[in-house]
Length: 177
Image (tube, rainbow, N blue to C red; front, top):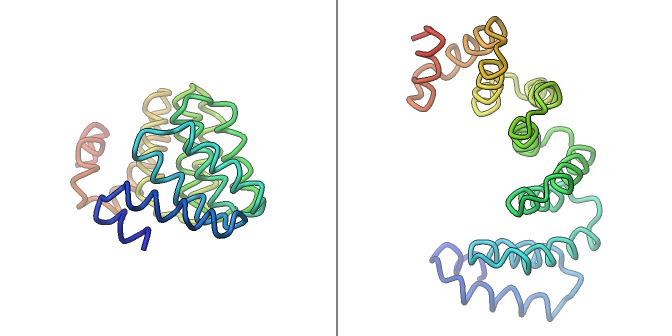
């Protein structure tokens, strides 16, 4: 029912539903994650963070919870905690490409180019044609003046996703379109 309310953009009803679920079973981590998501959309990040931190204690082996924590910390500009949460999520599930992608972006935004490159390449090992990761890695290479690597990654992006208009400008910059 909470998901129904969220899809209807009825955040008040969704929050009430998830709060009731937490009251009925305080150990129900998924209800806390969903409540946190609803609170986040409502701009109540401090409350959302408390729910996610509680959920991470209830289910310390959930990569999804630590991924959500990483996103929340990043949004709140607590970058060292965001990094730790993303690292924990990756340690729990090395195949979660979204975690690796967002962690790589976080590192890139902080100017940690070598670390970001390593994370993006880890993601590409699991999913060699992932458009988001290929795009991010190509941009990273361009920003760090690694033109040959940008061209190589851009060619892969073009090969698998060249018809996607989201990548047209980047591929044009590389003179691949």
